[in-house]
Image 1 (cartoon, one colour):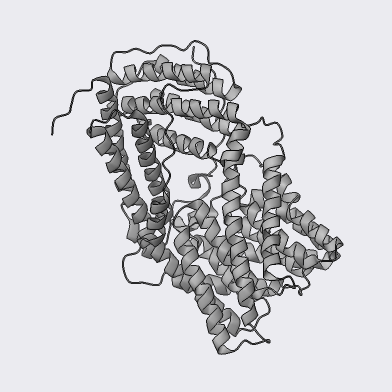
Image 2 (cartoon, helix red, strand yellow):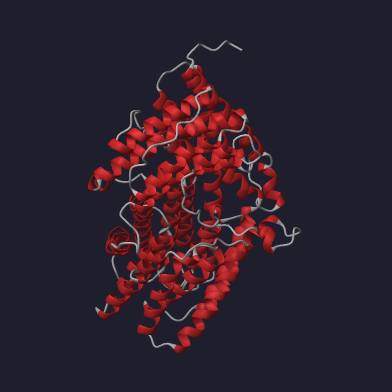
Length: 603
């Protein structure tokens, strides 16, 4: 009898076919799509205990502006406080916070250049050049990956705030307060327990999902759903790999339990290899072939030994590899070690980081961010508005491609700002200041984890929070100007985002495709080269599939752009799919060679 498995959570993406007519263009369909799932109550509690209480303490101490800066740091950390392991959160929240503090420090020192109500032309040009230069750096860094993208965003937004927001604290103190606010939320992330959750619960669930994805792929072998199940296995492996990453001090803290989970993850790699090879053959498998991985998945979730595992048939190289992998996995469950060396995640090295940042994708995005930031800074200063820094800060968020297609995120930003500004204007008229506004900030901080499921909702909540901070900091109510400057930033980003520049467009997707092609070639060369280092083979296979998954995601995002942009990356998804078939075939070859290590012919 097949082991009982834990029900899968519902899909996070609401299918457009259920709610939208087929004639809706992709960019608009993306704007109307929302994520769904259970409310992350732990993150809601952290959000409620972060920006609002920090601001309240500062108001009670008679230093409201200090609380504003700390609350800004907590707000940005709250935006990055996504579901995942505690270990991964240190990197995901900490690196952007350091970048934000650096940007605030640079901007605060640059604020000394400004003088009087209307800065002279040289000062205007100097600040414009400074923010544009930072824009190129932040944009180029954002091409490295998601965490680097968050760091680049915080660097630029905090720099704009530091230049334009009138604060009595010296630059060093501002940066330290920003770090203190982000550090407070990170501390809550590490210390507060999740209701109903055990220690390492997220990591354990991620590893269990890998075994269940292996079982699903084995069940789908020979059917039309096999490719989709293999893609799901890649996603499960990626999530488990990320969940088990973390700073070494934290890994030492729970060394015994974590060592066992890491051994169980490593033991799943040969299972994934065998399952991929069997699925590639295209023949249905006996039902009992999936029973072993399913029982291993349940054992990981419940933190117990799996018990006797059904032995699959050993009639082919793939089935023999599956049987051997099950035996090794059973050993890892019993002893907490694995017979095979667990491969070190082959994330991009420093040289690869530099290549991504300085390559075509980094340069293209850096130039567009620099143009958006420079133009918005120049226009904002020419308006002599007290909140002029909102315009470049808004442009930074709007120009980010990982927040959705350009037209989609501009539409969501405009609608979200209108809703948030209107709501805050009504609340500010009814509630006493400052304590009523502090309460609004606390509620907005609690809503951020839920609002991140849709860019318009996130914009509305952040708008309420930012307007509350501005009011508590001693500046006048500015809901109307927030709307005007957001619409102006939308126009600037739409113009610059579609502006033709020298060279090809779509470098971000093409660069990811080039990286994936090299990873697939490295894996193929390793297998055909006759190496007996299986751990290296698994690591190279992981890197190939992971990079191809990133191409799929980037291509899908680009396809939802307006036609003038989407046409530059047409066909990328099909190329990635063919490369995945090549990696599948390479995996099957690796399994065959391991079973019968005869040298391959030149053909």
